[in-house]
Image (tube, rainbow, N blue to C red; front, side, top):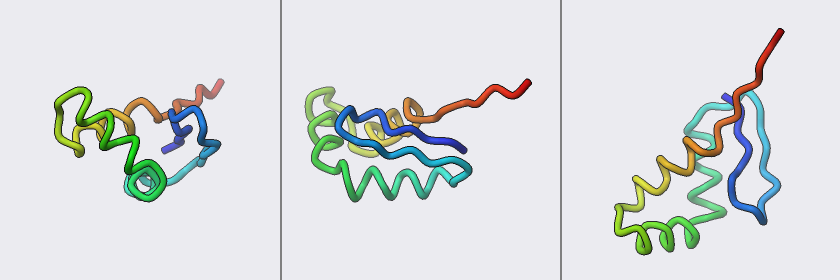
Length: 63
């Protein structure tokens, strides 16, 4: 899959990686942001991770 991190201060972009690899990036680089989202939205942190992964997926249209 292709990922473009949704966090505005992050330049992470990777093509052809597994979702687990991007999840590792989120947990290592954005743990505090994910905790903040989870607390603000009153959801478990793993749900915040899942939403962030979903919103970071980039679909490339091929002709």
